[in-house]
Amino acid sequence: MSTQTARTRSPQATPTNSLDRFFHITERGSTIGHEIRGGFVTFFAMAYILVINPIILSNALPEGSSFTTRDIAAGTALVAGIMTILMGVVANFPLALAAGMGLNAMVAFTLVLGSGLTYQESMGLIFWEGVLITILVLTGFREAVFKAVPRQLKTAISVGIGLFIAFVGLINAGVIRPGGTPVQLGVNGSLDGWPALVFVFGLLLTIVLYVRKVKGAILISILASTVLAVVIQAVAGLGIKSDDDPTGWGQTVPAISGSPVALPSFGTLLQIDFFGALQKLGPLAVLLLVFSLMLADFFDTMGTMVAIGGEAKLLDEHGNPPKSRQILLIDSLAAVAGGLGGVSSNTSYVESSAGVGEGARTGLASVVTGVLFLLSTFLSPIVELVPTEAASTALVFVGFLMMTQVVDIDWSSPQIAIPAFLTIAFMPFGYSITVGIGVGFITYTVIQVALGKAAKVHALMWLTSALFVLYFVLGPIQAALAG
Image (cartoon, rainbow, N blue to C red; front, side, top):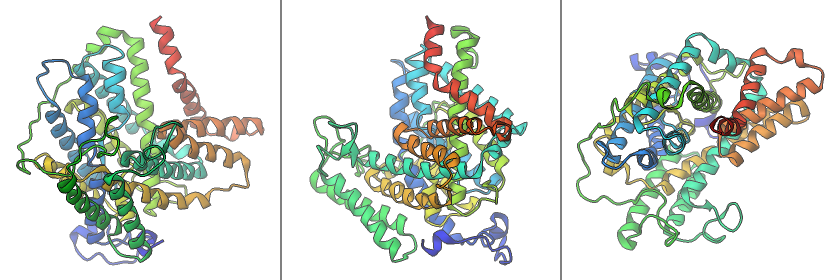
């Protein structure tokens, strides 16, 4: 690994200024330059949410809605910016937050289209889910669950997330997509189209710069790939990919039309009905819906902060990052803020690992990312200029960086190796961090019971394993209740 990813803490180092002292930059073996660059990279790796969240949530908007997808985009940027800055200042951790993928899909397709709730009623459930998780943090329960997980299982979570984000990057870039088989390379097994070239160019450039130990390799590659994409778009005039045009751009066209600056409109703020869902569905159905939202949010963040802490060399001897409770508290409040902001639950983003791979080690990087989110409320045309084919190169490469932790798992011991393997495998294959963690927890508990070591399993591991069993059969339970 390069010096920028292998740095460790230096307790004897002398801070150079007040900013350094506040964020412990030198102490963690970083520099202000590394933090700023890492914050930029994390932002560009996450910027797709400003486009994707409005697209997904627009499915939940009724005809004649008082706000538009542009309002959702501005609200998404606003809430993400505020909560990411709070993560940096309060928890001093290089972790950024935004509207959660998967959670926004649950709002649109499960709560609104599936359960018949209004947009505002669904945001009410998001709000109460956030309140519940916040209470679990303040009582110490959420942190206690996190610390009850065996260290090597935490490592497996980190490795699994590495494969997951690499898979997400390949999917977003269109290099891997559905086909005759469940997934396949590109279009009919071939890399076809200019966007694929942009991705391949960016990934190879990242690799070359990294092995030559060039600082800023990931950010340089994103910027260079974006420039190439802009040039290609100017010449070829491509559109968004579709069934009729599978070689178009993935999610954003790298071209600016009109002014690069637009005044934001925050029409989604306080678009919330706190108790409408309870009156419409009844307490039991609401409880199950909130429970499913909470589990997904609860364990995604646990896995994400371990992955980020591991890559940044910030975990202690038990595999816990510094200020775990503050990290979890900000993440929980982000769910509340997402409901109040009308943009779905905000949660910690594993794409923050892209910034860590670029050198981020402190909360200053999160502050930089948060400020960029706030600025993007005005500069949405420029944010949309970076195509996913350029940003996804960072996710794929950081997947490699996180995969290197796999050597810390004792593969000679089946009782830890099997749960670790299943945790790693189910994250990308199930396309869910939560699913991978749940399968790993349940398998670990079953194996310990089979070996006669049930008494050695932490009580909270028993509880969470039982909750995951319930989580995995929520569909049949809800169907039975509906019948």
